[in-house]
Amino acid sequence: MIGRLNHVAIAVPDLEAAAAQYRMTLGAEVGPPQDEPDHGVTVVFITLPNTKVELLYPLGESSPIQGFLDKNPSGGIHHMCFEVDDILAARDRLKAEGARVLGTGEPKIGAHGKPVLFLHPKDFNGCLIELEQV
Image (cartoon, rainbow, N blue to C red; front, side):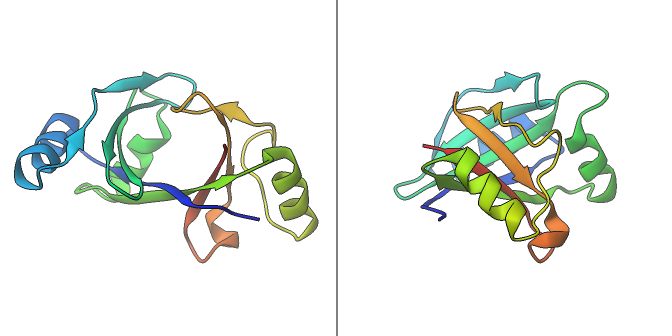
């Protein structure tokens, strides 16, 4: 059901410094900051030959990333995103298997302009999973 790994998301306490570290120290291709108000984050995508890294920074006071950073002040891996062909079929199959879909269960448009859903980390060994329709 899941396809390729689309990205690994890392919450960071300083978006500019983290982006510079990937650009300068690792020589990576780093995109511009992109506000995603529906998700309460500002993101920067780092393009790699086989996937992406997504840097996450809180956008607004109610950002879910702020809560993560309060618990992990240095930042850390926040979630992994896998591609799926049909997000509604994937959602229905996962729910039938007992997985919990976060929020309303209806896809939102993600940072790539495609429908996304998140799955409860307690159902996946403590890892928040994002599904993105390709």
